Image (cartoon, rainbow, N blue to C red; front, side, top):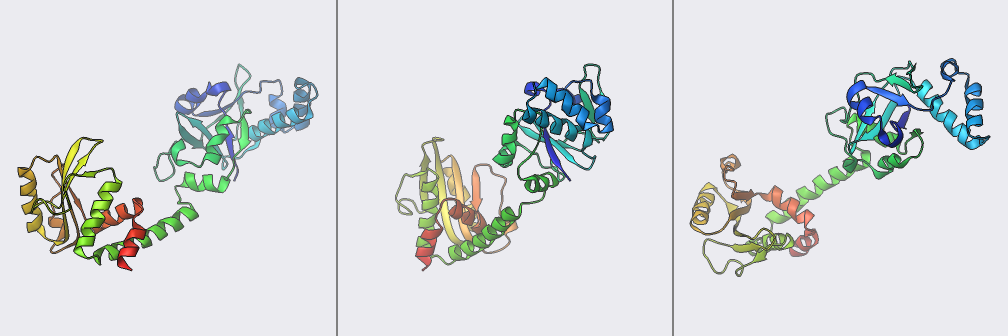
Length: 302
């Protein structure tokens, strides 16, 4: 299977028409050699473009290779292009038709798609730059770097090195969760304080000192909001209900209830108050990893 990038017209002038309306591939290179191309008489085609290029062998060969790909690629091969910051791909019928203006088309099998085979959108933000850089290609048709990568991307398959990293992160997260559960309650409060400070929150009062029902009183200079934070190593539904009532009596804008061990059924924890965020050990482990606090945690547990 081959994969080819195709530029749909000068400066993309045919992109909308080909992708959204006609469901076609379209090639310029207008010449009188359509029938020769259909027959595979590539010497005649090459001679024509050699004259057009004033005897420049390299340019004529480059022209010939692009035209030949357009005529000869199979319906099992894949065509890709970029439009509106998305990668589009398709298979195309093998018949080539000449239009009145001398351009040629191949009809797309089904339709152009900007999603992988599992329904995920293919945007330039989630595609390797060695693929997206082909948008700067000065010709019309070319091969792409990393064809195996691109095929897996189109199929919706996870890249092997990505899957290996995902598996490693999952293992790391599980181990971080176990380390968090083993923290002394004071160190657990300090860890939560560090997570918030790494996120830009500023502590208004000393940790766990000023108010019985409040472990952290925080202020965000970015959002100009004040947060009520309660940290519990072990907790239950009664604790949460009590601290929510305390939060409702305060003048804080939002509440964070943070714990690592829950007694009872976690499904009982309410999540219908947009002002209240509940962090369990899984959420805390994610934040520890993202905030670069794993080494701090290792040191505390060593």
